[in-house]
Amino acid sequence: MHNLLGYSYRKRATPDLANAFEHYNTALRIQPRHKGAHEDIGEAYLMDRKPAEAEKHLAELERICGNRTCEEYADLAKSIADDKARN
Image (cartoon, rainbow, N blue to C red; front, side, top):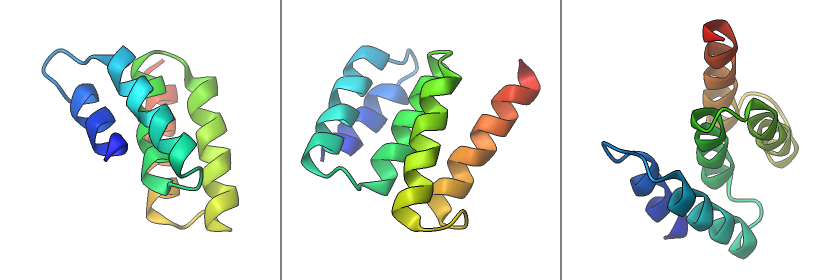
């Protein structure tokens, strides 16, 4: 539930990253291995221009998934690569 709230705050026409981070962090406190929350908070960190924080969640996804092929890892890895290409 908190991951979805975070997602909805992040996807607003005018993103509310403060509330998004609050809910993503709550989701991860409740369920530290929540792959979707790690992917989504990583995306939020990219929006907040904090790619190093996004990379930490990418590394956590690799640990949780046990590989680099799970959907959440692949999606966040692509977003990070796209962000690096833009900047």
